[in-house]
Amino acid sequence: MNKKSNQPSRGKILVIEDDERARGLLRTRLESFGFEVMCADSGDQGLKLARQEKPSLIIVDIMLPNMNGYQICRLLKFDKRFENIPIIILTGLQQSKNFQTAEEVHADSFLTKPYRAQELLETIEKLLGKEKAEEKPPNPSLGLIWLDGTKIAK
Image: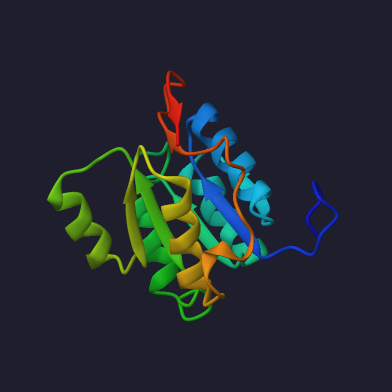
């Protein structure tokens, strides 16, 4: 059950992001899409939560305290108990080497910040094997996110 809307949850998503503002924006957006959201602000805390809660999907930043997103992805994807949990790497790092490393650790998707809400939702829906993303429209006031808070545009 989604705590915010009292509707059935569309799945449990773990967000591993050390930036408080980015983490809050992701939580708000995902909850508005009907997902139950858990958050961690460090790599080791995120790995522990992933193993305890076994979420439907994980969204992880690369640059994290204590353990980076690649390490988390590798530890989960190379463990039979967790290998089927889809992992989206969501980062501000846009060099091709980052994308290649994400592939090497078997991340399921690689998105860069700023991101479009609809693109994130479509990626989540695809990875969870759900119907087309339009089944529940997002909040129209949410569009392109600039994590410094200066701009939100459709």
